[in-house]
Image 1 (cartoon, rainbow, N blue to C red):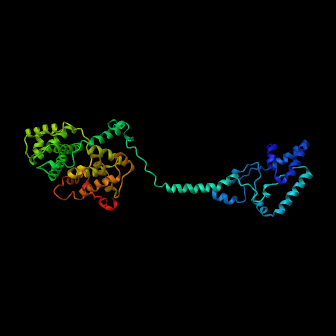
Image 2 (image 1 turned 30 degrees about the vertical axis):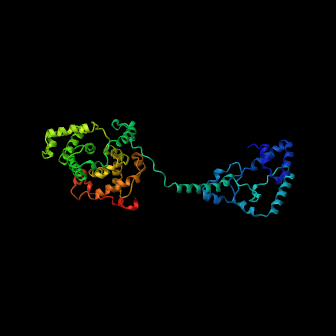
Image 3 (image 1 turned 60 degrees about the horizontal axis):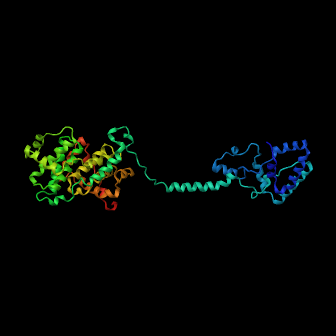
Length: 430
């Protein structure tokens, strides 16, 4: 280690100025002074202090710092035996300084007064210890911040990441597709009060027709899309065309025939539809009604129904088979009820998924991912959801039990037998 003039000047204590001057005189002595410098090289302690202080045990116990790794191996560490010297009086320390000064003058050597003779107040606090209190405060603040951030915002789930290689999932423009669906649903639904213009049929007759068509749909094992499109065609047609009650069943059969032609691969023939109606209509009547319905609707068959939305929302909810069947059970119960026409297809689908989740889990469940993809908050779904719970409770009673019987079969895992989420009817939760 080479000691420069700067290091020596920094190590000179202000109370030992004479010792510094003596050292400057000995610098001219030549070879003899070099030997003195070698002695100094072994004992000099620089003014920079390391965390080797009196309360090092408490510091090590609190922070578990290995003291030996922080001390420069060239410097002489302060040990426990110097702790007793700290308690000496100021007078004895002054006498010791004078005695050391006399020795320096006598032998022509510079003797540095060790920092161990300084009082605790005079010793500069090591940098690591100066930051100890600050680190403790910072750790406390970090703990407070962590306690405040317990309710972190739920991250959104990328529900389309698993279908990146599936061309049928159209991941590249799926969001744009559903934006288009939301715009179309505003003009592709029937008015919620269209029954007021019908003079020979009422809401109850419509419910009987839809309940019967759900059983027919299940008997023919048709696709879900076909059922939802059939109901949409019936309501849109009845909104624009008055019908007598004896023709209402014919309207339902023709609507299902058109939906099958639009959605199905294998379409039921006209004779089959006449057969299930107990031959109440002829073939010509079926074809004439088909022409009338298509012209009344301007051949507009491409409409977003609740089915296209519920499929997307079930994916956002990461639904399993049980949750999926329950959601379809609830939404099909809603198809029968005329009062549910006041809700848009997307809201109807979102409420079915929300109610199904509450039914399965036993508590209110609506994730940020579901809210993001449905564009509906939990509060916006509660009205529709509470109506669905009421339909669920009375599904097995009364005369219109077609949906209940359908979902009580083993084919649908006895979904209708599950207990309804009655807690959603509690006004305190609304």
